[in-house]
Image (cartoon, rainbow, N blue to C red; front, side, top):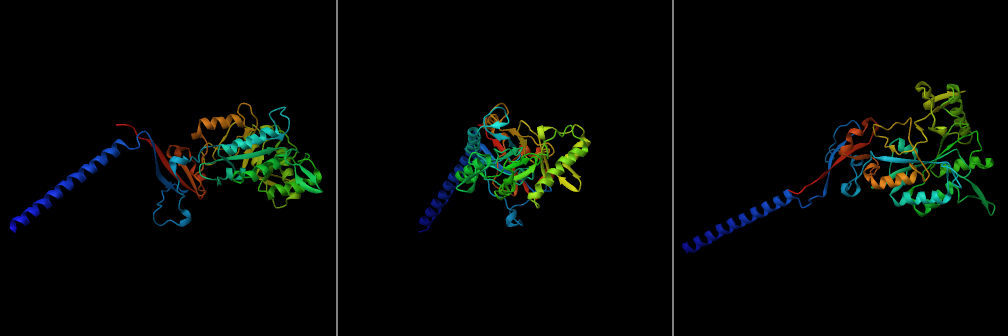
Length: 380
């Protein structure tokens, strides 16, 4: 009996020893796999930190309100970069392409199609300047602007005695495209000159201005009479900007214009004189601009970027030549790391850790800043 018990005990010890060896072998094998990397030569995306507007690191596990928690992001799939570049597109009129300021209807429609297919989504100019971008993860914001208030921007036709937006004007084309692709958006900004025949059809101007706002579009300042602000006196600068504000308020008394597009893309060389582009008054009418747009030839930095200057915002012209929309679409196809890519979380700004030194944290407002690191594992 004693001998049987002894045999059982020895067998039990042997099993334990064998099991222990096998477990250790398995663990060692797994460690080797990890060190060598089952994801050899693949990018690894790791969230590094979440900072609040004061630059302090936040703990997202405990003590954080539900609405402060960040939306989860698949860094490998999305590759968010909310410090990337954004195209602010500039159009003037639609028609036969006699120069760079006229876009054919066919090309304008093709521009919208290309933007949509390549993952661009419309945002308002104000939202871009204020860092208030709210689009789907993986998409890129784009801004549409139209200068001068040309009749091809917005035309009304009559059909059976009823008003109808001309499907071949800019507003009509945008609406039709939005019906087909609701996720593209309908935001656009029209810079008008009150002293000219804005949008044509003077008797319909009030109807058109209100229609634009009802559709979520904006109206902004392009001076009253399209003067060269580089040559204007301080008095004339304030006069032309304030008169345009006064003109709009006749039709939209509660509406505030707050962005200026420079006629001819020209501003005063004298920096003291430039101050009157930003704020001023004339005969009791006050104006204040949060952004000044150039004619431009290149995309703009995100508004949280240290190099973003709201007093001289670059634009990309809506034409097919060098530095026009098609040129930059092709550029971003080749250099996707340069373009702004949304994380899909309107309350958080997400950037690669390598971009951290380019961020002006004072521009974050109430948003959190989240960084992540991209590193590549190599063969041993």
